[in-house]
Structures are given as structure tokens and as C-alpha cells.
Length: 336
Ligand code: ADP
Ligand code: MG
Image (cartoon, rainbow, N blue to C red; front, side, top):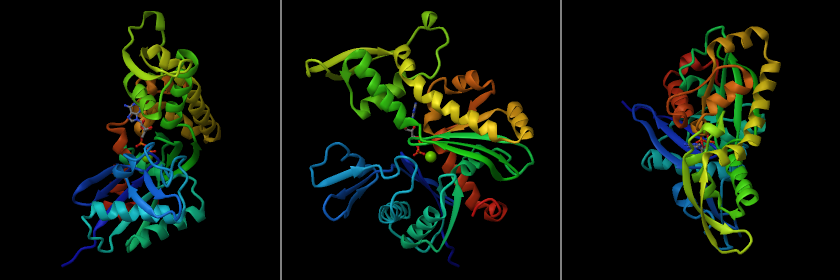
């Protein structure tokens, strides 16, 4: 007896993960594509392409095609899906059933492009699942109950804010502020406050090591510091300096408050009964940016609603997709 493989794909703005039923997560690579400038031939995808970021000659472009959470053009998407599927299935793509997440609020055109891209890559059946829904399932929220839940999934390019009830998204909003914008805010801050040019990778490292969303009493706080290498903006020479959490917290406030605005708007559009449920149960945070220290405290401070981070927030969406494809029948109503 030959069974069709069931495969889940989380095509994120920063990272792509693939789940194979009975195996678990088999692939986790950056969503990066390298292609030739002239004829747009795809040269590398994933980890191999990331190595090329910032290091390409003029004839090659290495890019993050899903940067703002918008689905890339059809050709790039299908090349990426083909590459990731082939790698995850060890080269044997035998007409798998594929479930893939799409950003909440995707248009019909975008949805059709993703389905076509998966079919082009060899999928026999394609199921689309909205990312906030996948995140909620992965967070083990009992989504089918008649009760309101808020999930805020903050990745690299977007923060997706959704309220769910009875297995469906009731209110939803995407804010194009997430991890990458935090990195950019750090680059800007380092230049303005410390006269230092740092690159994107360094900025992300600073965020992960001394990033902090919320320090209530900086005078009394014993901050963690790190040594940062960059270039002096005046002399142009290499520069090394110590940077601490308090300075970086300041850098992050503006973009983080834009996420708060998004959360407030979603509450503003929510039926009051559902808002009341969320005040009881709390806001659920997932996605890589949920790992930012004190992000939960920051959100609670500015919304007055308790917030908490799921276990292993980077894997929340792919786990949700995995659970949904393993139990297709019970989720069929929610996916489309
Ligand atoms: P996407 O779903 O958009 O691909 P992910 O959920 O994979 O995004 O999250 C990637 C983002 O999480 C990146 O911007 C990365 O810098 C950020 N991130 C990962 N780990 C941490 C951490 N420890 N602290 C803060 N941000 C983090
Ligand atoms: Mg994601």
C-alpha cells in the first residue's frame, strides 16, 4: 500500500519550515533566494542563498522575497517551494498533499498564486491556512469554542494580530512592523546616538543579546552590555564600543508602539463579548520576535491586558500547520 505524504509548509518572511507527517519538522531555513540579475534564473535558495546576502557581485541578487509578508511573484514562490519540498522529501516529491500558511487577509490572486506554485512544485492537493489560525492551533488554543482569543504572531516582516472564535478569524490586522523593523531602528539609533554604522546582521545580534522591550526603572536596572563592532560615522574607521540594554530599549520603543496601535485597533473592532474573553485569557504571543525580552510585559503595560509567550514561538505556526494537516477533517471548516 502506498500512502501520499502529507507535508506542511510555513513560508515565513524570515524563515521557512517544513513539517512531514510522521516525521515532524524536517527543514528550517532562511527565506532567501539568490538569482541572476540578467535573466532572473534562481541560483540558490535557503541557507546557501543567505550566505550570499551582502556578498554578491553585481550580476547576482540575493534577496528576501517575502520581506513584508507579501507573497512574492509566482516564479520565485514556486522555485522556493520546489526547492524546500525536494530537500524536505529527500528529492522524491511523490505528489504530496501540501498545507501551506498564507498571511491573514491574502487576496484571491495571492491565494491562487500560492496554490499554483505548490502544484507546479508537485503537490497533488493544496490546502491554504491563514497564518494567525495556524499560530493559534500551534499554541494549543481551543479555537473551536465560542470564546474569544487573541493571537499576535510577530515574525520578521509582519505582526499579525487576530481575534478568533468558533474556529475562524473574527477580526484581523497585519502591521508591517516586526523583527526587521526593530533591526532597522537599532541601526538608526546606533548612528544617531553612538555615531556608529552597523550592518543588518550586527543589528539583529544586538537585538537578540541586549534587546529589551520594557525597562520600568532604568536608574535601578542592572543592564547587560555587549561589545559592538562597526564603523565610526565621522572618521570612517573601524570602531568598537559597549552597548547596553537601556540604550537599545530606547531604540525599540517607536516600532514597538506601532504594534500596540495595531492591537488597539483590533480591540476597537472586536465584538465586546470577545474582548471580555481576551481580558480573562490573555493575549497569546508567537513568532520569533516574541522572544524579545519583556515584550509580554510591554504589551501588558500599554494595553492593560495580560500577555504571554507560547513555548518555542519560532515553531508555533509550523506545529499548527502540522496538527491541522494531521487532522484534516476536523479543520476542514477553518481552512480554505
Ligand atoms: P517569519 O515567520 O516572518 O519568517 P519568524 O517567526 O521566523 O519570522 O521570526 C524571525 C524574527 O525573529 C527575526 O526578525 C529574528 O530577528 C527574530 N528573533 C529571533 N530570535 C530572537 C530573539 N531571541 N530576540 C528577538 N528577536 C528574535
Ligand atoms: Mg511566521
